[in-house]
Length: 319
Length: 319
Image (cartoon, each protein chain N blue to C red):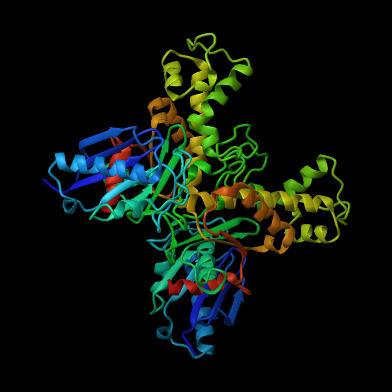
C-alpha cells in the first residue's frame, strides 16, 4: 500500500476529515457539524481531536503522513496561512489557522481555500491528470475556482487568484452578487441567481409546470428543483438552465482568452443539470472562440467522485 | 559598458530594429517600411540585412549578443516559434519565423508576439521592475497584453494567453470587435470603438464642439482627436473617454479577480488621454474591488519611453 494522505474540509455547515490513498480514493472519513458556533480555538481543538481519532483507528502516526491538508471556505492569505475573512463561519478575521494546526501536529500543514484544494484534487486525481495547466470551476450556490499552472496552484499575491465567479460578464445586469456587484458570473450563473431568474421568468409571463405548493417560497428555488423541472419538461426550468449555461460559456471563453489553458474542468452541483447545460456551455464557448482556437481546448466535467472537498484538501499535501 | 541587446519589432506598417543597453535605453535604431508587401522569405532577408547593418555600424558581433529578440504583430505558437496568423501582413500562415531567423544568426532567437514583448520590456526596464508578477495592457487601436508570473511571461498552451482585449465585458453591446464578437474589451474600449461611440453620441443628440470639417469622415475619429476634444472642453469627447475608462476599469477588475497580481501597467496611445481617463479606470476598479482587496494592487502607467516594441523585443533575450 502506498502513502496515506489526510485532508480536512472545513465549511460553514459541516467539516469532514478523510484519509485518502494515493489514487484519491477515500479510505475512511469523519463528518461533523459540531464546529458551528464554536470560536476559532475551540474549533481547531475539535477538528484536531477528530483527526487524532481517525488516525488512531487506522493505526497511523503523524509521521506516516506527507502532511496535513486543510481546505477552508473563506479568503486565505496563502503565504501566511491566515484566514483573512469568511462569510461561512463566525469569527476568523485574520486568524492564523495554519499555525493553529501546525502547533498541534508534527507534519507540515498546508492551508488553502476549498476551491483551490478541489482544483488541485481534480488535477491530481481527476480529469486533470496528465496536464500541466488547467482551470477548475465549481458551480453550486456560488462559484469557486482554482488555477493550475505548471503543475502547481497559481494563487496570486494574496492567494485569491482564480476568483472567476466575481469576474463581471454583464455589468448592467439586474442580478446582484453577495459581493455587492452587478452581473458577475456568480450573480448570473450560480445557485444564487436561480430564485431571481425564476421570479423574473414568471413576471415576463412564462408559464412553469413545476408542481410547487401555492404558498411556496420562491427564494428556495435551487438547482435540484430546476433539474426536476427539466426532467418533467418545464419550459421555465429549461430556459433558466440554458441562460446559466450561456453565461458560464462566456465566463469560460474569458478564461480561455486570459489564460489559454488546454483544459477547463467543471464541478459542483449545477453540473448535475447534465447534457443540456453542458452542451450550452460548450456551444457558447466554441461559438465565441471560433477561429481563435489554435490548439485543443477541452471543457470537461469533474471526475472526482465522493467528497471533492476532502480529497482536494488531502491532495494539497502533494503539491 | 554592459551587454548590448538587440530587438526587432515587426508590425504591419513598419519594422524597427534597435540596440538597447541593459537599462533599456535605445542606443541605435533602424526604421523601415520596405517590408510591406514582401513575401515571408524576402521579409526575413530584408530584416536580416538591416540587423547586420546596425550591428556592423556599432562594431558588434553576433556572439556579443545574449540573443536576438523578435516581436511580431500576430498570433504566435511560442513553443514552435511559428506565426500562426496575422492580420497585419499578408502571408505568414503557419510560417516558422523563428527558424527562418535562427538559420541566419549564430545567437539564440526568441520570437513572441509584440504585446508579450512589450510586457516583458515593461517588467525588465519599466514600471514592473522589482515585482515578480504583473499584467501589462497596451491600449491603442486594439488592446494587447502580457502576463508576467514568477518573473517570466506566462503564455498558455498555444502562446496566446493574456488576450484580455478579447474577454467579453458587455455581451449585448452594439459594439463588435474585429474578432467578430460583441462587447469584448477591445470592442468597447480601444481605438476601434471610437468612431462608433462618437456617432452614437451624436445620434443621441449630444452636441460636440470638435472643429471637424462638415464632410469629415467620422470613421477617422481616433484617440488623438478626442484628446483635442478633451482639451477644448468638448462634452462628447469627455463622455467617450469616461466610457472607455469605465470598461477598462471593469476589464482590470476581472484581471484582478482572475490573477490577483500586485501590479497592472497600462501603455499604448490612449493613456495619453491623461488623468481623467486614468482616474476613471482606477475609480471603477476600486469601486468594484472594494473590500475584496487584501494586499495592495497598483494600477500604473508605462515607464518605457521611446519605442516600447523594440525595447520589449530586446528584453525577450533576457527572459
